[in-house]
Amino acid sequence: MKNKYTLLLFFAAFNFLGVQCKEERTELEMLPPVTIYGAGTFGCLINGRAWPVYEKGNQNYFLFYHSGRLDLTYTVDNGPSVMFENIVISTNKVNKPGVYWIKYELPGNFFNITYGDELFISDSKSNENSFLYLNISRLDSVNRIVSGTFSFSLYNYWGTKRISVEEGRFDLPY
Image 1 (tube, rainbow, N blue to C red):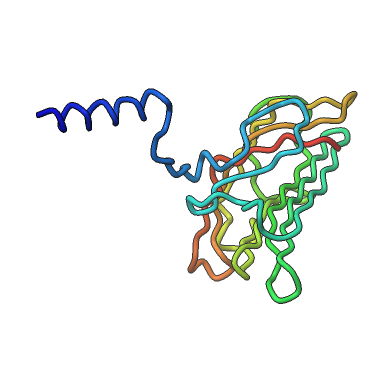
Image 2 (image 1 turned 180 degrees about the vertical axis):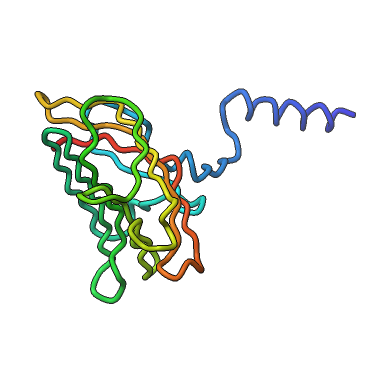
């Protein structure tokens, strides 16, 4: 009986001191937080997996905003032997913070993703009913910051494979 209480006391002490098994983070927890102060962050879930994985490849972004025109490209270059991956959002409809539903239309409203050596682009026939959900939470032309969230899904050119981009978030200076 004495050993039983000693063992119980031992586990209670470890718990009290904060020694616990390390829990794995979920894919959503691996994304940067949603912020609006120009933190320089970008992330999303691609088919349920966190992207980009920050230990992988050279990462950079291009962000342009002027008079309603928003162009955002986030790229991961994995080196010469592996194709780069990127997400592109381009629209001429963003004039203030708010929710925008972007459908491919000329001139200049499109979105696409290059992922796993495959291109999924909004202007293909298989995506004629696809929309980009874009929620701009900060549009600051004085401090030059654009922040928001996004999601979309697209098919490849042939309509045989679907990709889902969810929980997207960005907080970038330009």
